[in-house]
Amino acid sequence: MSAARITRDEAERFLHAEARLADGHRYDDWEALWTDDALYWVPAGPESAADPDRYISVIYDHRSRIALRVAQLKTGKRHSQDPASRVARLISNVEVTRDGERGTDTRATFIAMESRSRGLTTWAGTVEHTLTRVDGVIRMSRKVVMLVNRDQPIPTLSFLI
Image 1: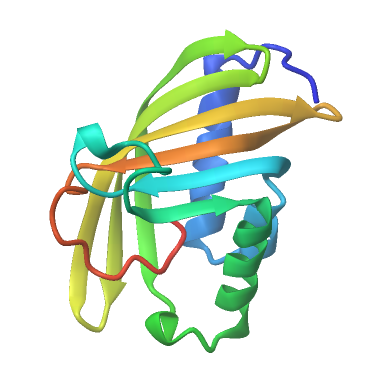
Image 2 (image 1 turned 45 degrees about the horizontal axis):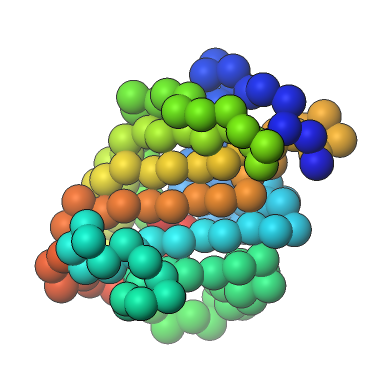
């Protein structure tokens, strides 16, 4: 992997493409965006509970668990996604927060509207990524989604947030 700097414009294009793949249920393409040392984390609880080793998480997946999550979604038999949610996501306020050895860290805000038989659910928060180049292609090694309502009861989150 190369920690070659990724510009804000490149990061923004990557985040929009990632959202489009997730919203379009293009699971194989979405999974291909990850590096082998991936971490996908959605903390639960108050801000002070942002330690996955000590507190409950909504999602805390390493690379093999991401692959399993995608495989389950692709079966079409995942009860919570039968039928699959329709999701439309907006990504904004993209910024590069740091360039380091492991890659370029970004932060953005998002709003995702999920349509299910129970009605519309609004998901919102911030999302942090660590992006790096692998063979010249931008990939993500870390994605942390901080939901604005993570300290409240959260309905079933069974799509790729």
